[in-house]
Image 1 (cartoon, helix red, strand yellow):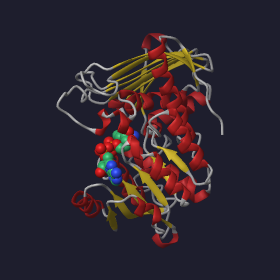
Image 2 (spheres, protein in one colour):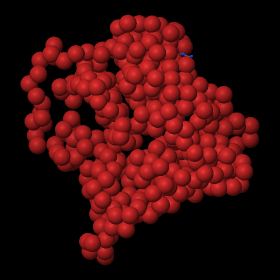
Image 3 (spheres, helix red, strand yellow):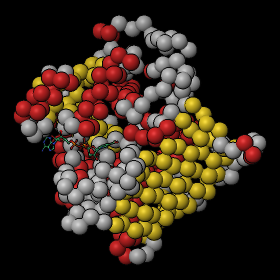
Length: 382
Ligand SMILES: NC(=O)c1ccc[n+]([C@@H]2O[C@H](COP(=O)([O-])OP(=O)(O)OC[C@H]3O[C@@H](n4cnc5c(N)ncnc54)[C@H](O)[C@@H]3O)[C@@H](O)[C@H]2O)c1
């Protein structure tokens, strides 16, 4: 399929706009804003055209500068202004974890649809509160587990749903970074009041969500949580042996001290008919092994960039690969479509219920490390 072949002839004025209020202008503020801008022209016709209304941050000069750079009409140092602004229909929370609950709930209670970065809350209790309060308002909600929106991961989910793996026996997932091995560094991510946890909520939560997305619900965990660096308030690393309600067993690992591993999110699933493996540093590829194929030939590399692969209609001819930043384009497009069509964010997008459930697994990992016992996971309902 050639470039532009999927572009429908729709005049810009025919598509309704949605006003965006962004909390945070740093890492996620930038990644999400980049996505809003690309949605407006790359996914044409988008479900809604994002209008960048206002951005909030703490530092006046920096947030003014960010508004100018990113193209927001207004800026503020008080996030309450976003909640009060009638021109904003979608509130995007890219603030630190301690700033997820209050602004996100306030925005939803003011009738705005909400996207909140992961982890949803600092604990399962806080995440449950966010989910319940936001769900009660009836707005659409999405928790920022963006790795669901890697085309290879979505393809894996579709293959699993189609039964191509047979009975799933193993999930092995790890998320390794190394920037945490720096005693001189100070960031909110190292403060327990702001972050809640360390590698667990920062990286482990992504692995937990992907495991839930691909394999199903966690049943129990046996885990170790470790802080290596003296004086650090949060964990540096977690290791967990896990079981799933569907019968599979597996491992979840996360650390910010794996020297040389810059951003290594990797998983492998073994079923009775096939195995799949993914490595984010090879984001466009899915490794597939089928037991009914020629076993001696091993895994096959599928380049997930064909015209009929997930989200490929937004991008380029086959083989012209995409990157990490595009996961946010897919994610936010998914939310905008749910808003425009009054559709569901689940099951392919992570709702706040998914954010809560991931937090329940993360809490169980902490409990297990403290108790030394295998911890069953009980999920609270609505
Ligand atoms: N999905 C992902 O892959 C991914 C990646 C990185 C971070 N995250 C999540 O995104 C969230 C933000 O992380 P980040 O890396 O962007 O952090 P960051 O430190 O880069 O940015 C935080 C932003 O919040 C703003 N902020 C802090 N306190 C504020 C306040 N009181 N009022 C207004 N603004 C305030 C800061 O000015 C800054 O712009 C975290 O929850 C994190 O876990 C998700």
